[in-house]
Image: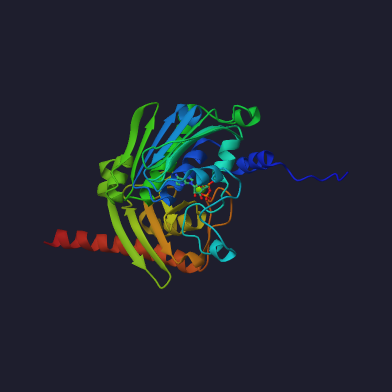
Length: 337
Ligand code: ADP
Ligand code: MG
């Protein structure tokens, strides 16, 4: 008998979950990305005990028919990618087709969805479909995740206090709101509303909610482009600074990312205006042809590879320099008159 065996689907999903579902915040991110991909205008996120006991994400997106709802939980099942070419031309947040399969392998999941014509509700328990019924629901999708890692004690042990887990969730929800200011996003913790982005399209309004009036009032709008990149967002005047790098938000084509290089370019651009050890507050969204971005770097999709990286870094520096140059000039003009 062969020593090597192909893993059964449940085991494979649990292994994938190791990369995708480290903590409740990853679940919130994956579910919100699915809502955005479904064209949602409103997303509500309800979290209980830092997401450890329960997470509910509800959207008014396109929903799924009963067959798709079943398929959605299969590993490598996606509506967002068909051919090899598509992989180098990704315009959606998701494409790997593994989030729902992974999440359902390590938690209890109830998915309720309706595409406007048909609807269904199905329940998964640690990898097994335990119930599916057809029925009509509000158009869109509601997914409820509970009992995370209860059957995988080694993973459960790594969860931190609810307050800490919630702080990571809140951070991700804020970032997604900043990168999609035209979507209404509400977040609550243990039944208390915590954050509410109106979907008005104004990132400044969201900044105001996150950091208060001084920061929002000191935010300078930016809009710069070269042949390949278009940067929009806000850079906060250097008179307000922070002691850590956590206040520089980057997104590429609406995808929130972590990029040390982009942060370094920002810090570099602020260097003339800010003492060492202090860091700026900024939100930059980069729009670029999807062919110039490789999003398939890690299962959690926090990193991207960008062609023409040096050009982008230069454009970031230029963007900041121009913003403050203009600011300084405005100040001069107003003091002269
Ligand atoms: P991916 O997003 O990479 O395709 P997922 O496992 O996150 O993989 O989701 C699988 C599929 O389920 C998606 O491709 C999509 O068709 C469907 N889906 C998931 N969430 C939603 C949602 N909120 N609204 C509509 N369709 C959804
Ligand atoms: Mg997804």
